[in-house]
View 1 (cartoon, rainbow, N blue to C red):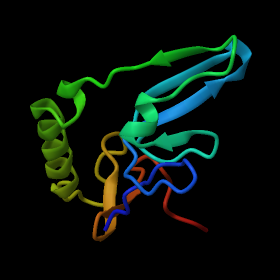
View 2: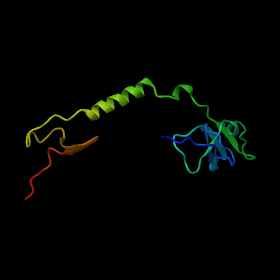
View 3: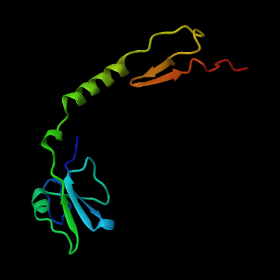
View 4: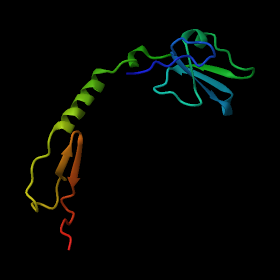
Length: 127
């Protein structure tokens, strides 16, 4: 369940659509698309407050227009995600203990999506 972020302006309960950041060193306000996650020194604004934003005297406002094509995942992103899931689900081939000390790590245990691997070159005998 995801909780929608609301406008940072007092008494405004509209959903946020933009993020405002101040760059004090350059006397600049940057208003861009809604950030991926809430930052403590950034302000989320609704469409009305983003449109009416003015900067202090002597400051510049930079408005970064959102790219509509970048709003959703591309087919490349989905294909990369599917390939990563397939790779994670593929078990490593079984290996003989002591066979080949140079090669891929050996899977010795697995719990859901986590694997415990053993370095084939590591000395496992203690004594």
